[in-house]
Image 1 (tube, rainbow, N blue to C red):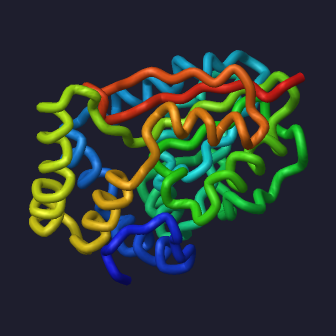
Image 2: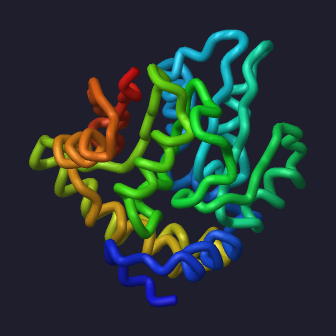
Length: 232
């Protein structure tokens, strides 16, 4: 697959790319984010504020490292991903939560099934962002919550330049040293730089049928955490 990112993704090629990097994905991801991904997972869990008796869908769960962060007594956490390689890697590392192979545009769940839904660093890899957000709304009960954790860019000009340099040069260089598919991380870097900024993404989320959309910046602006509610 060409590493050149565009907003016209080819699902089969993206899935194959994640299948290829799945065995070492968690280790590489920790290196790429300087270990900050653990903090971001905790902040997503805090934003979801899951209570006993509730169920949550973690879409684009990958190896289900993120799904594990939501599992607590009384909470049903289900991970879903379109990469079988990622889900198998999660099982291999001992994840015993329910994991489902599923397309974000046609989720295999009944309408109103979940109290909360979330997707971390996966929305930009879906071929139809609006369609995925609408499908997440479909499987969420009225009054339920959405949390999207996705890449962003720092507002500060100097930090923004440094961030762009890291994404274009540093990340691919590191990937060549530690990943089985360096081109995959070139794609991920380029897709990150092409992704809408938080106000634009908030508009997309609202247009997909969610309300009360807010966002906060993490990692010095490299990551944005959007929250929304499904209208009752």
